[in-house]
Image (cartoon, rainbow, N blue to C red; front, side):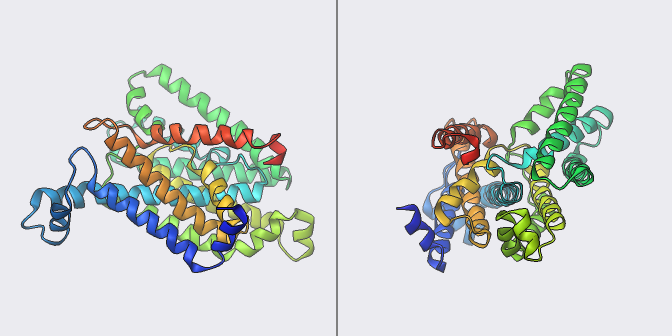
Length: 337
């Protein structure tokens, strides 16, 4: 399908319905497949008659449904974050990591493991707080220096380097922390509990809705700061608000999925190929594409080496790295991205 034809598809509801159908099919496949495959009869029995199919019902409702819900939320949240960041910074290589989400969450987690090893259940909350507060620090520093888009990126690089140094120091002081931290840093969905998804779901949904409400203004901002200001857009306020929304969505994902890489970077590019750069189309297409991608990646991690499994973060690295190289090869230089 040509890019122009694909973009026309998303000027009508049919394009979004097609992506939603693909996501639904991926979710159904993920429900049935795994180290313990479930046939169609047992599948429908487990869903509709749990008293007769108790084993299948437990697998579906206690293990696979929460995991698929987590994959959908992770893909959606990181995709919204990446689309916003690439839009408001003007950097097509931008992702949640440039605003300190990964470094902030990682530093908070290793601090808790070092000083509060008995409060493991609070690690998700600590990861969210670390990611979000680090981003607020970066945004505040950038706002105090100047309004240039590159300032946010440079501030993010500096703060991220400091936090990564702190992570390395604590790892050297207490090598036993590495086992617990490494699982978090890779990104995985194997220990998901349904009760842990409520608050992240609210944050991600609220972030998406707010981003959609701001989409026309963001499109104007992407045309250039001077033009946006001349049209009545409060450039600095809008950019900072978008950064906060992006950080909240990414931090919500980090709190239950760990440091899941590449999603926020590559999905907006995939969505842009399908729907164009207009935010009111790009955001929903990014959400559906990201949710499908992470669902499929998690499914592959479960079935490729069953009964063992690969964390979804590793699968995403195998998918994302070649796509990233292809993206670079398709362009002459970074400025063309």
